[in-house]
Length: 201
Length: 84
Image 1 (cartoon, each protein chain N blue to C red):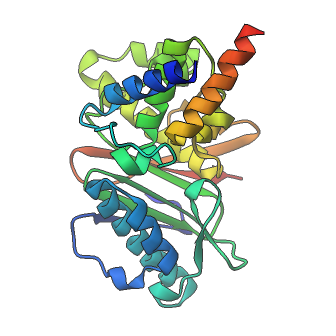
Image 2 (cartoon, each protein chain N blue to C red; image 1 turned 90 degrees about the vertical axis):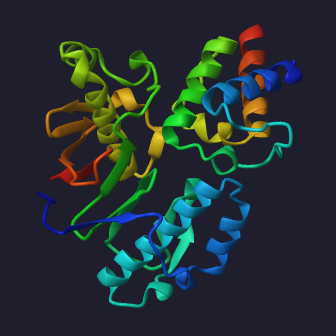
């Protein structure tokens, strides 16, 4: 169940989207994306994000004051306590908006391969735990673990500039330096897995 | 030196995205936008380059590797640091 104060919406990138809500800056970014698939996902992600933020702010999607922030991440240009995160993989777009604290979301294909070498992003304890799993479920568990760690780094506002091994996952909790996170497996279409991270205070 | 690193970056990119046509790559273009790479792809790219070049890229420097020019400059600097 999604934590209170957090709204998660799941969309199909290939579904029709009202692209008239995008800003000139967003269209300029679209024009720079050479991959058609990436362009489609960006447009879908932005329109879905604008729609979710419009609901939270009580305005029209085109009026949501977004700009490109550090690392290309979108940020609101008005003072707001809202936190939000967008992730897409294949044809699935997930948007999370929180009124109660930092939030991060990540979605990946369940059969994603190759995953980065375990030593690069898992703690020793996590490696031992995952190695004990049956091979038939291990790969999916690894993808799930990746989504958990990436969701936390997004909630931290840092993305992959934070060492993934500094985020320690145990069950439905994660610890990053000085902070604790609740992890929620999201209900998403077959073929992908997604995790939501919200801070425990 | 720089040309050697450039060829390593392009080779590693070819491993991560085998369908990528790197012959017309703008050195300043965002690799994710050019080749539809996501964060895991970029992470794999960094790991591959670390193995190829024998350097360690700190996470805070990952954004430097989002373009070919940035990657070559940063990796060149790391290797130069290793030589001194």
